[in-house]
Amino acid sequence: MKERVHKLLAEANIGSRRESELLIEQGRVRVNGEIITVGDKADKETDIIEVDGQKVVFGRSQKRYIALYKPKQVLSSHEPHRSDNRQTVFDLIPFKERLFSIGRLDADSEGLIVLTNDGEMAQRLSHPRFKHTKTYKVQVVGLPSERALERWQAGVELEDGMTAPCVVRIIKGDPRETTLRIIMTEGKKRQIRRVASLLGHPVRRLVRTHIGMLSVEGLRPGEWRELNAADIEALQTPARDIKQLRAASRQQFKRDRDTAQREQRPISRESTSPRRSGYAGARPASRSGKTAGWRKKADEVIESWSPDRRPRREGGISDRPRFRRSDASRPPRPEDGTSDRSRRGGDRLAGEQSRSTKRPIQRRPRKTKDEE
Picture 1 (cartoon, rainbow, N blue to C red):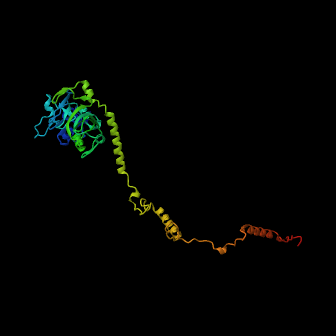
Picture 2 (cartoon, rainbow, N blue to C red):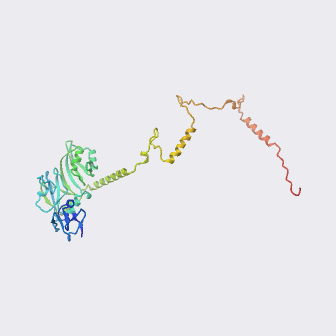
Picture 3 (cartoon, rainbow, N blue to C red):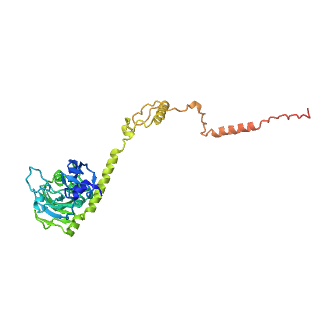
């Protein structure tokens, strides 16, 4: 059965999957005499796979799992730089077979590292996609505030991107030095040190205490031991805080998604249209050609109908002339003070009676043909 070549190389303990991909990218891997590219497949039973001209042998080697306490100034890299003469973690064990590490640490840090020839497990426990937990005991300068701890847990923007959510708890603290317990599922290069310095609390000491539920307890710096079945199960079991980390990761994913959607949303017409001055300056000058047309006509009609008004005088009293009905058009009021409505009403009734007493018009009947 054909499988991806970088997976087969990891299975043969040539290196991790990432290291195998680098070998393929450098053109150092051939299948049946031809240079391949990343993603190509081969059958380990029928095809001949070579690395630097050496044939890869696929055997059924025994799976090995080693827990090691990495001391300070010891490198995690399998092949250190030629000019660097410092020890590596592989110099501390007697096994000469090809092993690779689960969870690297920088030279200034110390703590638990697992060495194995099981490529599948190393990929599953090391890749950030699988969200496997690693726990650290960190001593920092000063006492971080609650605000700083919340910011640390939610994620901090670094030069190479935003950090993933993590759990930060104070174990022991005083104004001079604080000991923190930090649980992470994804780590950038020297992330804890960079974040701590950014928040104003540089790291004094950093020790990895757990990978999953596997503890470094019982080992001193430079010591190692092979893992049994219970240890391997603990290694693959995430920390108890994984639920909180997964919930925080989901919240961060939603925030990033909402931010991306807002950035991709098209700009509205109102924000780019010219704006009026004055009280209604926040509204656009026009919304569409049809609306602007009838609005303009309405404004012209209102202006033509509006009479010229002079401003009000002080005190709020208008100085516009008031148009009153002249006294000549109003009938004189009787001297006795009574109203003239009854008299006008009586005249109206009298007129109706006079019209009703007129003789009706008499019409002559039309003659029929017989009378003619």
